[in-house]
Length: 407
Image (cartoon, rainbow, N blue to C red; front, side, top):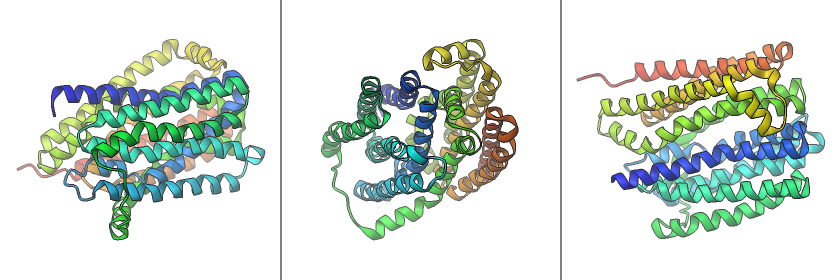
């Protein structure tokens, strides 16, 4: 890969990652300013539900796809599989929202907002193929403009109509057009957009990635379990405040992945070539990026975090300084866990990944039930920190135990 291509990959991957992470932050800020913190709680819970079922839509094929340098599956198979999983995602969002307790009259709004995550799941298959083809910049650029369009339309309509429901419905329609315009021309020219309904191959791919999907679904549960606990034990106002103070934790994961994600295919190549030194060096680079991101975000959080959050979201969170610090620590551990997850997936240790997440899921479920009733949002924050620590420990031990023997 040329230096100029790597530079383009980093630029557009950075732009796409930034807009992907900050779009939710900006949308939440507009909602809290326009409709209040309780409306922000509804929005954040709906996004959490969408993200939970987005793991089904993506089926965690991306990690397998971009590291499939031996081309075990062609793109038409990946595309057909993604159509199936996205349809299942839509069904999951609707059914869960209809039958989940505590949503009542907000169920239609929750479904409309949650469905905005469908486009992230569907476009990801094109994004992944562009990266496998060595043109990460094309997929990242298309994703940037699609996400920007969705965010801009949603925010504008929230301000103009003062209705989250109208803003969500119109944004869904606009997102369809934006996705087609952004992705299809480049995809059609590079590798085609016709799915292949080879059911034997689709079944094999689904089976191959099933441990990854289960791990991803469980990992998203780790991030969302505090929100589910707040929904059960508290109210939408508390949900809104938690959504605000959770944002710095998200920033750590985003900053570390800016460095690490463009190196995934190279890491896979090192592994295929039995170059453990090169493989391990990339993992270390990712973990060092996480440490750097944690230091930067932690410093900002302690010094100017509260005033910035108060100004940006229009709500006073000065009473949640301790919760902020705990969540930033959990965010750093989550970023490290994601990097180790990519490494274990490249090593094709999908089942070990799942069991690591499963252990963390047990920990966070116990902590949510035990800590939120007496401690409120601090209990939710501590539950998140405990789950992330468990995940990192499990993944690191697995990687060291299964590393190749030195010759």
